[in-house]
Amino acid sequence: MLLTGAEIVVECLKEQGVDTVFGYPGGTILNVYDALYQHSNEINHILTSHEQGAAHAADGYARATGKVGVCLATSGPGATNLVTGIATAYMDSVPMVAITCNVNLPALGKDSFQEVDIAGVVMPITKHSYIVKDVRILADTLRKAFRIAGSGRPGPVLVDITKDVTANTCEYEQQTPAVTEKKARYTREDLEDAAQLIRDARKPFIYVGGGAVISGAYREVRELAQKVDAPVCDTLMGKGVYDGHDARYTGMIGMHGTKTSNFGVSECDLLIALGARFSDRVVGNPGKFAEHAKVLHIDIDAAEINKNIKTDVSVVGDLKEVLVRLNQQLEQQEHGEWMAHIADMKAKYPLSYDHSVLSCPYIMEEIDRVTKGQALITTDVGQHQMWAAQYYQYSMPRTFLSSGGLGTMGYGLGACIGAKMGQPDKICINIAGDGCFRMNMNELATASRYQIPIIQVVINNHVLGMVRQWQTLFYGKRYSQTVLNDQVDFCKVAEGLGCEAIRVTQKEEVAPAIEKAIALKKPVLLDCVIPEDDKVFPMVPAGAPISEAFDAGDLEKTGSV
Image (spheres, helix red, strand yellow):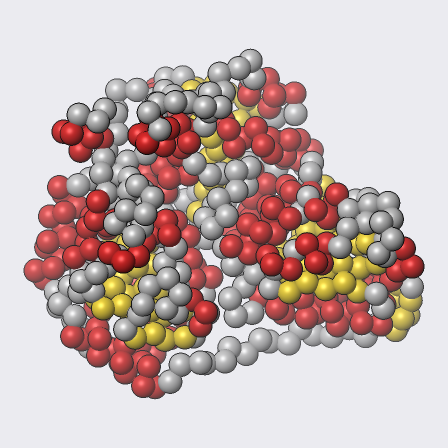
């Protein structure tokens, strides 16, 4: 049938099973929005307050559902406002298609009004970027974009379309999306080498990353841990793959990981890395990371093998598929002495905080208790992010969404809106520091416009907490530009944007506030005021070995606090 380019965009979205998109209209993308208007009963469009919010919402939708998220923006500043959200998705391997429109083809390259080469701008932060100048290739380009975004190691793809292409017509024929075949890049010998390495180990440790979430391999990871008889730690991105309540679980690894995870990995003789990339926040000093261990690395991306840490055996392939086969090959292992040693460390080095005052760890434990661990948590970036990772016990994947690689302040609220649209039956709660919340708090207007029942928790210490922590420990308490003690009233802001608001200043107010926020079934902000000098512990200084993790007690012994 003969369709305009704008109609082809909508038909391709329908082909791909897209039910929700996030965006903000403008001049060059008007034809697409006009077509969306005609299909509003089939594709739900969420008008965000800012294009960055649209990108983060598409990202949150994708992480919460495993589907490809979609965001839309107009040319020039509309398109560039997506860039931070696209980079966030790229760093965390999130499948996303960003559709932008540009000026008419004859006006390209002439510094026309609101013209930007957005395909060129995002080239380093996308799996691929396209600019479509011919309506006859539009449908195939969009199909390729979805296929690339969701296949292999997922990531964002941008499709930029000139405005005249959205108005031009051509024949369109509907297609069923092809099932992407996973090409195994590993051999039988790779699996045998991996199995033998595991058999030879006496002190194995499993390290789980975000790739385990993406591949849907949580059952296989849990089976492997039982078969190998090994403790399990995770990265920020791997939360929920291994049940946080299980005795084998030792907590997060890295800069703010538990002492048990950091010390255990430093002592182990085999580190089994599953869908992880050995980031600097995990490794610390790469020359001293797991220096007594052989390393088995399983990942879908061959580029990650030996990039940061040298491996002894690697298996390149989809983690779920690899573990199904590896588990079949393995016999039951027994490491009773090693597991007892890990249990002793867990008892010796528990996470701890000051129970006498209102704190973020206490708030996270109360959220966990009130929601029975069934909430979907999004976060911004900073101290609150680490506390949310440490003190809420995640039992399933895709229930903790956070900007791990890029560390994007302002990510969480848009992501929470997107997650709630993708998982409407989940209680969705965003945890943000007051510094992060200021960056994109306008998205509360989006939540109130559509009455999306999310809960925004602001951990309000009136400072840029994580930066202040570094200034306290490493910069002689010179608090340069990190104090936010001004006249901003977040409750009034939330109410002005159409949301309910509750201020929490005492521990006994936390649980009733959470319960009320859930019961209201509308967007609610909780302004939780905590002390300005609370710190995240344990901690490893940047570039130091993770075996040098310290906490408040260690600082007290050395007289550093």
